[in-house]
Length: 258
Image (tube, rainbow, N blue to C red; front, side):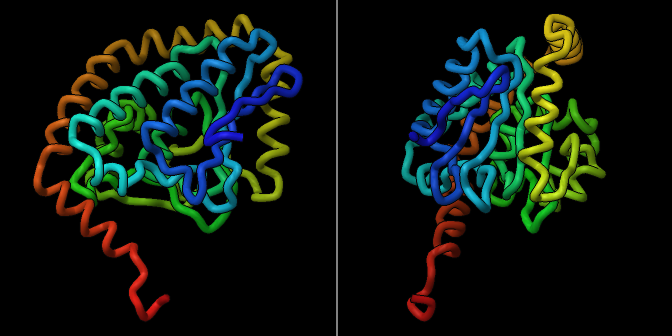
């Protein structure tokens, strides 16, 4: 299996992310994710798609910081634009997408979950959040728009400007996830829910989704363009370059640790 793959059982499809060690997002990952979505969209026998990780500790750790530092600012901005296009396919789809979160969902990783229609998570010792501001960046893969729509502008602003990360239990209280299950039950419960929806009035469900998104999110396309413009400025800034370098240096083990 590649970094991201699509499989189906009955009327429920699954997009599986499997790029160790953290499902970090770079241009090749986005290409594979986009291809998996296209496969799901072409599958007329599928109505519900579960997005999950094949890794034990991460749903996705977000953007590949090493690649951010290595790339030219324009390359990073182009990757964000492609990620916008890819994630928008989830919200524009007639199908229902469910994020199954059982590990860290941070930055762009949580933005993948935000682009899904529903977010089911397990209890566990992992974090959910949008900490990009600590790198001098911000959630530019749709995060500013989708989180504000989900929990309101003021709460979303406070969450993003502090770079706060929370537990799954706290995420449920804040409205960041839809449902919370015991770790051992998450996959079973998510699949049961997906099968229930897939065997229901699917045409009506599709129209409900489209009515909500086409009405409530009319101006999000403008917001996405604003995200791309502002993130391009930040990727070109000396502050971000310095913060990325500091972050990477802090993660490297010292000689005493080796």
